[in-house]
Length: 391
Image (cartoon, rainbow, N blue to C red; front, side, top):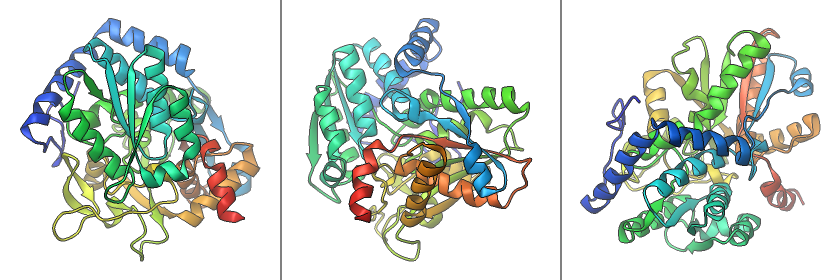
């Protein structure tokens, strides 16, 4: 296991109060112990197959490829996982860790609600008490997911301070974690936060890229030319990218939310327009004011509505290993409709950002090139929101 100090170049680390540092040390030591334990890995593999439904297909989007007229576009179908997104990969892994640590209560934050639903799901599976913090703004635009969480037995706490979105839900969860550390495990949903969370989430999400790597070699007898995934905090993207990171011929592209435009203040393009700072206990590219306070952010996709980005993505950008671009709300919506009508697959609005950029890239490439897009979630949760926007 590489990177036990939690840094990716200058990014990452653990910038937290002493009380929280003590709690995180316990999580860290247990994670590094169990991630190499054969019994733990066997149990994880069991639930990946029998509960999540892995492995999922690497699907050749033939009609989309034909419509675009360039490179072959493959979709890694995380939308087919139980609960409809990649989030379940991480929640199953972390809840198995919490169980081994003897924790009885799980807390989590959620933006789009997919991580909250995935957390509530695994808590129901293992009979654990579950509290989900969600920004009040997000509870309104994702009412169906709030109901799902409650249906699964979770208590959903609307966060009413700050911007009332994902950033503030993380703040509220961290406060709870410090106050109730004896019996509580914080199941963080993205590859962000203080060490060991970014590396822990990456390890549980790397099943995406490991499968995709094996699958593309089986069908094409070679690696892809491009990997493309949406980036908010960055868990679905790092899960796809990491198993390919040493394959220098494979280009990595992360797609950030440009919202209403990079020339406005209503976006969440942390790498494209941010600067290096500390957010939620780790160093990363973040959208911040002159005093280092996080700026308000916007995206049509609640799951991308975060003023920072994971430390490993920050490092990929700084080192040149990854390219980070942005897609507007409108471009994402257009891709949402295009994939739905072309392939019979309704993508999550988050994933639609990646689809939109993949279409742009594919058009400029020859037909012998290969793109893998991470279809990180299905769009059921977004259909009502989109309906209201176009009516």
